[in-house]
Length: 80
Image (tube, rainbow, N blue to C red):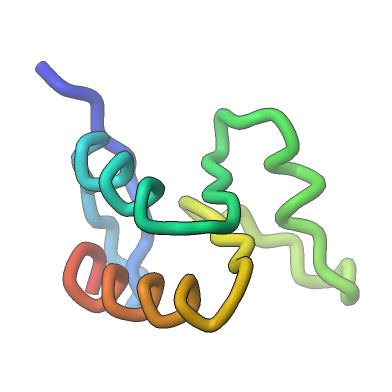
């Protein structure tokens, strides 16, 4: 059985995303895709206001507009 990642949706529900879907998405990005198990996750999730200590299911470090567009499209299909 292939691994999957649990990600919370915008409305707070949990969605299971197959590892293969995340791999294909990562291949489309020029920037980094950081998952909770990855080295650097804690650093990547830091925000200016430390009162907001969130743990996103994945973090996209966009390298340009194309990454932002790809992320918006992928998230609306995969974890909406």
